[in-house]
Length: 324
Image (tube, rainbow, N blue to C red; front, side, top):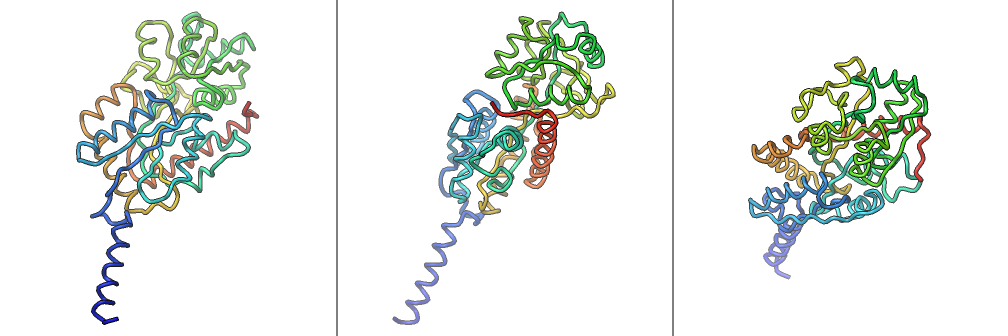
């Protein structure tokens, strides 16, 4: 074979390899991107995934959002973990599948720490401690005193076993040595309905779901688990303001990639997400719903996930919480 032909073939082969690798910033993305959401349509994870898809669509990029629900998020997370790490599949992960369920589920279908790479921390919402109006408490300290004066008579509702509301309530119990019964529901809506009806007396909800009930006077807010006050409910103090800094946490959502995904693809998605969620229209819409947008680097998101995994693991162990 002539030397010129060999050289031509070598150049063609090298070009083919470069075109196939999403690590090339000039080539990526050259095909549709998929975001797997393991929670139901209409929830926060779905809303932010579709908002990001729409922003990329404005640039002519094709992004498909695929809802794969079931198993408290495990089905979708497992599908994402086992997807090809080619830079074209991402997962809208959240506190449950990445930091809580690994402590509750004996046989996880994936390794949350090893099978995913953090991409970007998109949004979070603090838990807010609310009570039925019949409860004679206007501060967390007054609630603690009331519970201790009536041990075992009050109950707190949550969206489900292992939810952020459940673990925030358990954290509150542990730090204050309280006797209060946990009642878990299938979702936040039925839990909140029962709180309004007085069937449960206490709940750690999230701001977007509670705003309407607060405005109508059907529940009373005592404190919020955030570093600073939430603009959507500016009159609700933080636990830290009230001298209770140990009570923290809330649901969060962010993008992950299957382990092995090229760094260039992760960096591209990170940069585009930072840009999209910093845009005035989308930022105002989400913050108006009581959501915070941390954004930042993959490394910062990774540290957050590690801290959350350690925090809730300790609460679960101390509370001897088991999956049912």
